[in-house]
Amino acid sequence: MKPKYQVIIGDIKSNILSGIYGVGEQIPTESALQDKYQVSRQTVRKAILELSNEGFLRSEKGSGTYVSGQYRSKSAGNSNKKTIGVITTYISDYIFPSIIRGIEGRLNEDNYSLLLASTNNDVAQEKKALEMMLSYGVDGLIIEPTKSNLYNPNIAYYLSFKEQDVPFIMINAYYEELEVPFFCLDDVQSSYLATKELISKGHTQIGIISKMDDLQGKYRMKGYIKALGEAKLRFRPEQVLSYDTETKPDLSAALKKFLHENRDDLTAIVCYNDEVGLEVVNGCRQLGILIPDELSIIGQDNSYIAKNANIKLTTLTHPQEQMGRDAADWIIKKLQGKKDLPNSTYYLPVLIEGETVANICKGRHPE
Image (cartoon, rainbow, N blue to C red; front, side):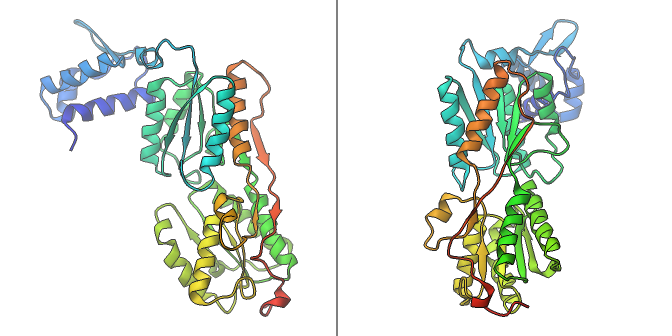
């Protein structure tokens, strides 16, 4: 359990960084803080002293304690080298190393340094990462949103960056409630092309597995529904398996149940990404379902795990390194004062044929 004075420090710092307490504004009195936290005056003073030393507060004798903006210059130091903050959901998994490599490569060309944080797709960790970036005083920020399909409680921090004229751009997704520039794959088109490919091979019983707390999952579901509609195929809720960050650890078991229950109906599955696609492959092997003769599978993102798997997964492209490079280039140009930079950039996916999709005539019944 944290010492009480550290709890006070954390709360006041959060209120300053999220803009609840503005620079120059007086914070609650020592006695008010004593009452709120049920602590001694000495504990309150210890917290205020530490925050003053860090440049977050300044005390005026006989007047009170006020918010100071000094922490920004203290953190940034005297270095002329600009620092760009990068917040992604994950760092070492899946497509993220490639994205970060693209960002780093472009920043290095102009002698920018990089401050990296990850959230594990958890809003509490995103809050910590944003507070770290604000405390440090980064010059710009590249963010992959956390749980982008859900309301985000950290919006105030993003507004703080806006108020301080710190440019930021989002990658892979964005918060719909914020006016924010972004670089994204056209996720609707990705799932649309995947579903159309299966339909063109004669499949009419096509399921989907999608992650629904991220915007990518919502849009990939939309592309699937759009392709079914165009082909006049019925959307069947029982042929949809959805999951989120919290239920992802149980996905393998849920998948096996889904495959078992739909074994006599489904002839194909559109997967949220390659990681899920390969989970489906494993599930099929355990249940004795032949790929692609009995079940066709399409992944998405053309990730290194798909390239290194012992089966060549049919998938769709994702810009990965290029997206990272473009986002870094956008931030650099913004800091250089360039005008007319794009507010939204979509990359078009391309189907990569593998060995996990078969013509329906090769497999089972179309209905």
